[in-house]
Length: 339
Image (cartoon, rainbow, N blue to C red):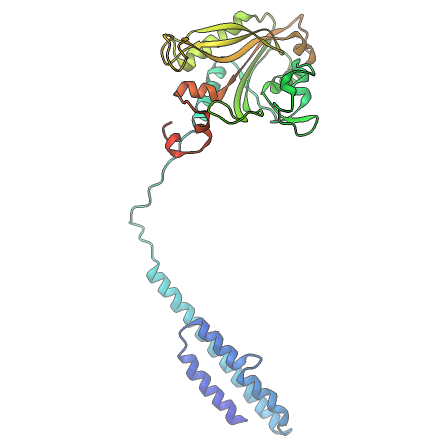
């Protein structure tokens, strides 16, 4: 049996010296030290030895096992070191080479115009207020003087989550929440995403952006509203832009008006953008309805106010002469890089 052990030591030494890969090394470990390995088989035959031979052979077998283990560990260390040296040689990085050119992004046109609108109104003393996009029916409709049978409350027009929760159809709920929390004077704008069950086409989307404004104080009149929107239009589109009010109806304002701006493309002469009229509809506005003030705990006998709302996406389309709303939501770099 001692001769077998000597032979195993000699053969394992020769084979380990010729190993070139970790896979080969693992195969040799299994061959000699595995459950069915050669050294294991020899140790299992020790039961046939005499009582005197067994401890002597056992000690020698353990020495052989320790020797093979040490040889395997040393070979593994050498192989891993050689592999690392090869990788360092072949996978070096030349820090003097020019790096890949990084393309810097730019603001989305909606973000650019929103920032510009915010700056205009902040310059006129307005604060910016935001609110939840998942809104209660009370804030989205009831508090804003929408009666129970108003068509905007229909499920074909509004995304309902439950009977009492919906995706807001306007940012007007922010106005109500602000009036509940703050005492006049109030001067805010409320930008944000809104949702309506519209089919997607060149001018409609189920998700779009709005900016609404609210002013509440003593002695506020339509003249204040007209002056505010005149300043806004001139700051956004240029000093030559004019505004005009057309009578309209909104549940939450009385009197109400649609506000038009003279066409920025043709300066009012008439073109394809304004469909020959010289004017472009920009926003809706009016004096805050007394019922809305009462719903928010404000006495309409003491305070008055005006409100307005505009579609930010439409403002962007007019400013940059974009003819399809979908372009702003497709994330095409060829389109977005123009801004």
